[in-house]
Length: 163
Image (tube, rainbow, N blue to C red):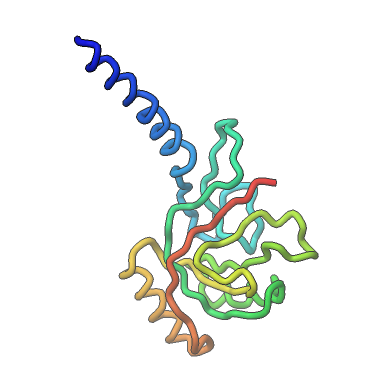
């Protein structure tokens, strides 16, 4: 091996190591648990639960896999009640109904936020799968209920923000 080949190999190693670190810690995503009767431990009833790492690596946040949700209702921030969420959950027993409480003063230990939504508003949503076809089926079921005229499909991720 000549000197130029060695220098090229040495230049590639740090980039490869950096990519391995990024893909292992930043890009890893937790599998969503869509069954409302079987949440992953550590999540509150109004949160969409997902697998989180237990590897001792310090992180600022950890994301779920991308998924589709049906936004059922949008309200001013911090206005969704658990009673309201449970009433909607009763209408859709096989699909996890979740709501955002991130940043609400009455719940300073809330650590789950959601992507692709306006944080100035609260919402109630239902998990609708990982494909557009699954989301379309759930949206049809929601529309058949007749109580959520503005229901719409949104692709998002749940984000655990570490304190």
